[in-house]
Structures are given as C-alpha cells and as structure tokens.
Image 1 (cartoon, rainbow, N blue to C red):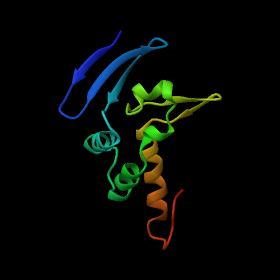
Image 2 (tube, rainbow, N blue to C red):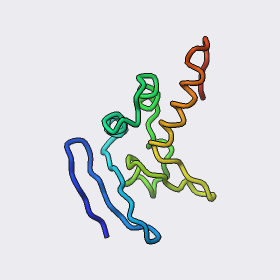
Image 3 (cartoon, rainbow, N blue to C red):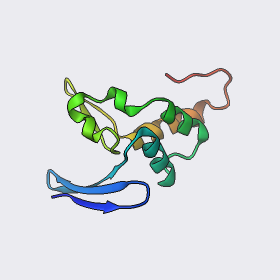
Length: 109
C-alpha cells in the first residue's frame, strides 16, 4: 500500500516493508533533495549543502533503481551492498566537518 502526501517541495510516500510503515521523502532532482534536507533541518551547514549539491546521487544508482534515485532512502547497488539514504550521508558529513573544520587544507573524499 502506498499513501502519497504532497507538500510544496516534495512528496512523501508511506510504504510498508517487512511489516513496518515507512515514510519516504521523494524529490525530483538532486537540487530538490538537498533543498528538502535543508528544509527538514538535516543539512545545517553551507559546506555540507555545497558538497551534496556538487555530487549528484543519481550517478551512483543502478539503471533499474533510477525511478527512486532522489528518494531519501537506501537503495541497493548490487553485490550485497547499498547506498545509504541521503540524510545519513549528510549526517556523516556533518560529523566529519565539525571535527575537521578548524584544520587547514583538509579535504574529505
């Protein structure tokens, strides 16, 4: 069952996976995804916003998963691996950023 709720910036789908109801935020583009994470207060730092805008999540998604590339959820990559949900990426970047922001010439790959 899918219940879709609409807002100005995104759509929210509710699905049931393994008996658990899950709300998934759905966006139309990488820019929309990043904007949505900012609106939801997941992204709070300009450096993290710029980083997530610079690298489009869609380039890492398999062709058979492209329909869901801008959903805020983990997706399978094959070989028993997944790409984490975008909100998890932004939280990990924030932890690294806060730990390293006062050091000079630091780059995070």
